[in-house]
Length: 340
Ligand code: ASP
Image (tube, rainbow, N blue to C red):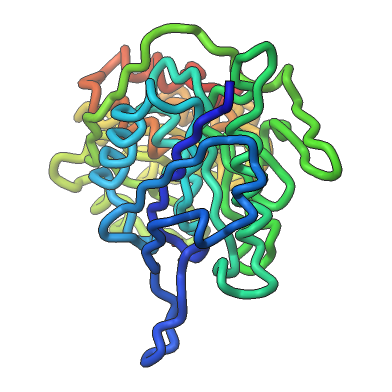
């Protein structure tokens, strides 16, 4: 059967054009993808597209954008075999992480892609990214999708979405999956790393639309002032903190710092320890500088990325989890986002 795919264009450089007056890049709506890229007719797939209104630069992504995107997938889930999401690169890792949590029991491909140069530029990377993302979203083995998960395709690499970070603002090779192998490598052949791809569970898709953004990311740096940490942890209504620590989860041992964390934890705020490094994991207790964090009740995030940690926290809080249950889920892989 001919695979049918839905292309969801949300904005981003891939579809941008230069504003003649200001010279700045702005999203441009495309209604007919075959007109935009006649080469797509050569595919033996049926492609349909929807365009967001308004189209956005992904720096303007919000929780309501994620809900809108999840609803488009939910409403079209039965009609299509897979989805390609065209999205700006700046926050693509956040969106792919969030969608992986929102789309529970996902059994079809949701492949995010975008580009560093707009489609209209001769040297664009968008064309290759788009075409390969389509090919991957349509790929089947024994009639079943090869990649039934939320992934990012960019510059010859297919990565689990919730394992990625944008690490380069200029190179075509812009995304990194520091702690998880590539799901596929693209050259003359597309070589799928099938062992590493999530298996379908054949259950009904459940779309979790409640998100709670009562969260912050607190990135440590040498010299961080007491008042900054205390004020951040005293924000009214704060429920979750992603604490970006050094190396294997290490933080200052100053009494004022530890006391500020203890106070926040005593108010029920969950502190989730993730590393600033792009590879490797939090290992609380490896050094004296992290042992204390574990003792006072900071939760270790293993090798989760910051993007995935903030998405997971918003998702779990949105589902109403708190206390011990929330801590338990934060320390378990829910969508392959961390390795124990
Ligand atoms: N600012 C753009 C965006 O994220 C950059 C891109 O698409 O690559 O929407």
